[in-house]
View (cartoon, rainbow, N blue to C red):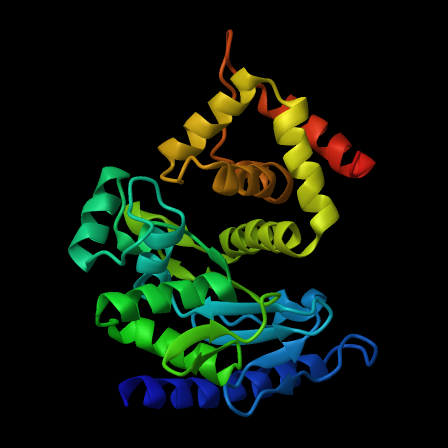
Length: 302
């Protein structure tokens, strides 16, 4: 019941945000925007990707259905802490190194894992990206394991059901469409280590996560990235990129590393780039690797 009440309150809160967004738009030129439609079940705004950043509140749970990118859905959590409470165990199951792929771990295990990387559960990721197939896998593993979802995970599940992204069929969680993809970003506010999520940081997180959407939705782009990884980079360059990403906590599998490589190199502003130059034999020059990747993607599949 708590999850249902929360989701209902969210719809009201987002509807209020729509009115504020409309008022702001009224002061702009007539050609600037059209009023976004609102999903009655979730309060999700329906708008094109180019209007998304203007519609973001500072620190409020918001949902967006992106109308000119079929299959793309965006959630802004009210804070990094709320995002972490919803997704930390999903992230652990699907993409964190040294975490099991066949069971949902406890909150204590998440906290211990986060401490290894100098953060807390809220700071495991700044943003997230998951296909709805991956999200239903989390809920199915939890169901089969008999794990009780925490309150925020139940809220997430309720939102996804009301958003018509997932459903239960004969007690089994399934994605409504294998082509649906959710990215999440935090609202503005504090982050671990005394840092702050401000509008510039949030924009960088959004850009990075949209890079994952491109890799998921554009098969030619994804193929070009994989060809670059296996045929253009040397073994030593692949090993160094994998080492750096694993040190950030990512699972070192090719499935994760290639996707993260392209999202960081092509979609993340330089000020927030965690991949660094390493001199000497077996090292990498990040700028040169980026330019070569850009050229490979521009050429397309070979």
